[in-house]
Length: 138
Image (cartoon, rainbow, N blue to C red; front, side, top):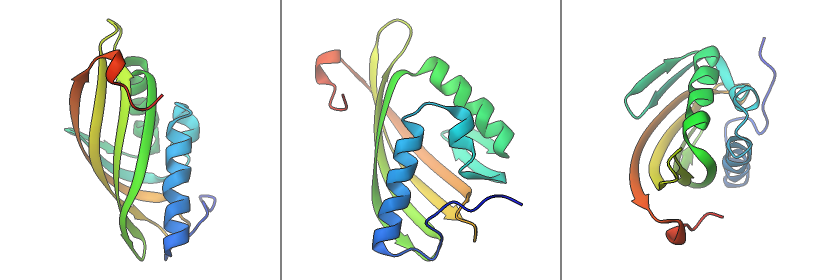
């Protein structure tokens, strides 16, 4: 059985904000193992055009992501919530191996199980090429 990840649904404004901050903090570690533990064993993701199923695929995906997206820095914001679901907007900045910087924007829809683990994550993301001087998330 998976461990519980507090706060648990149904969410209040306070606990929804806590859950979003916990996700932001975890992703900013850029540690695929740590981040993957917030998801159910059989989690379902859509990330851009990737369809990812299960915690092991999440770990592999995040490993590839952070090998490509260097100096990654993320900011998440709660957009709305109801019972065990949330809508979150985010932006993150990163650069590739050539030194080109990007700001990626998007929206995520999250669904949690009764243990507070994310069982579904659907993300739509767009990238903007920026210069280093245009960075906001330092």
